[in-house]
Image 1: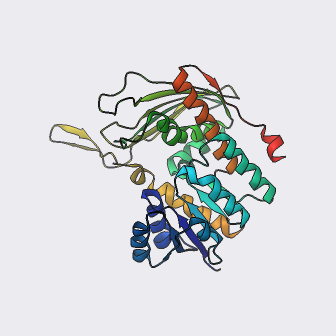
Image 2: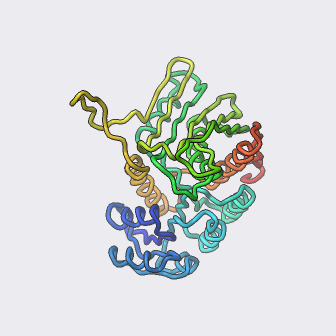
Image 3: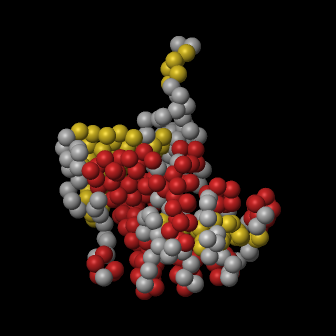
Length: 335
């Protein structure tokens, strides 16, 4: 079988990580080109991986020797780039967010539907993490009965000064939005986001940490604490509470020591360490699915739904009130 020829748009932290992954440890794939507004950065990466640089991302997408695309560009560029991927019938793994607002995300969903087959997979990598996958299998088995509540913790060691309050919802909490929809098997219909007195270690006006409550159509609920300037390390935990028991992931599986009057283990410094295996599985399965004309993961609809929830979440953070999620009727959109 011929390798899937992959081009990557955006080679910042995430895009460069994916470039290494595709080039060095993804079976059935070959990295052929990268594009980034920072030409020097793109050229340095391309030289290390022996691929070419394309100055215009849209030219990379349209290139005859690019079979599939990974979008790791900024969210504001996604809508145009996704539509060009659809125009050229190129499978695409799009890092979150799908787009920056629900209206443009819905337009992307509708455009893909007109193509007649799914081409867009959204990069919610937690679905591929072995711990989350095991939790999903356990909950779906019915062994614990109906799942009632999800408790989530999402903490980053630090965030850039430019990472503002609304970005905590749109770029961090969005992962819990997707996980709640996936684990609980239904849409989020209402979201409430509150913030305590902010940490004294964040910039002026930044509301960090934040606490959110999701209400789902099936009656389940999920809560999440997001704290992007936790100072300690990267920590993600999830506990599912069901009718006949509970299950928790994210407690750490590394070496646990007792020495020198202390006990404990290491905490990863960022998301790439905690979810390295998830990213590897995600990209490998995307490549295999793209080669057979399919996707194997979160769809464009999943990306749209997450954007719609986060849009309501930002409104709730501003108003202090619960906000209903304005979500299109899936049956009418997708038939």
